[in-house]
Image 1 (tube, one colour):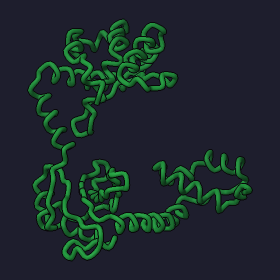
Image 2 (image 1 turned 45 degrees about the vertical axis):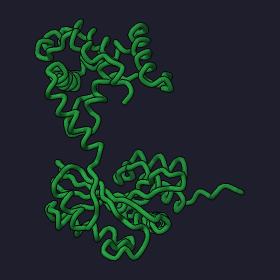
Image 3 (image 1 turned 90 degrees about the vertical axis):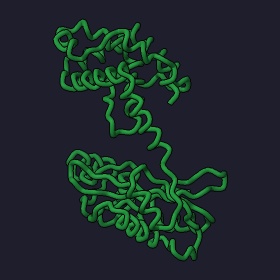
Length: 311
């Protein structure tokens, strides 16, 4: 078969699919450099961002047909809903996910709805919203008239989620990941050494982000042959199948209470970069801040266990 001819319609259609799949903002196509690039490579003019936005429904319709087929083919399914607020815009959002068994007995996760919310997150409002989203896919909970039969909802530990599941006449199961996250956060507050370490790590990460001198020094230290080999060895121990030809990490990760797995990722990264970080004491700017960061060599050994490498 011959290649598909390069026309403005093909270029814009494929670019739209790319932006949707990779979460690229539509203002990407407004950049003069981007428009010049496509003009030179394809000899085609790109549409403006408003035209791309108007074409989104054309991608949604066929995907919804696929989802409807999956839902109708499944005998049973579970749902999960979650809600959060965007700090920057102040808007509130709700997401409803369906989980259906596939032919190989694994679960398929299908996002049925992700929409801004105008009402408060009460149990009645959550139940009403969930019914509306499910109804748009032909699922009527009260009648169980079509497949799949929704019998259980996975929720976080909030009381409004449990009450909403009861109003929907669904069994509910607390999310194990939420429970584990809460248990670990509570455990951390009970271990002074780890609590102190996370506080110091947060301060250190903030210091590195504010200081171009220190962040550049850390990058140079990681690139030194001896330290580079040690960093690579720790990474290899953590993930034996990791491709070490890629660039080694040169920055720390800030532990954030509300960001999932950030504690584990932050501690991992510190263990990987501990020796280069320790060498930062050679920098004058670091010496001024060292007492404020409150790192001590014995603290890192407290958590230097293989446990953190297998999450």
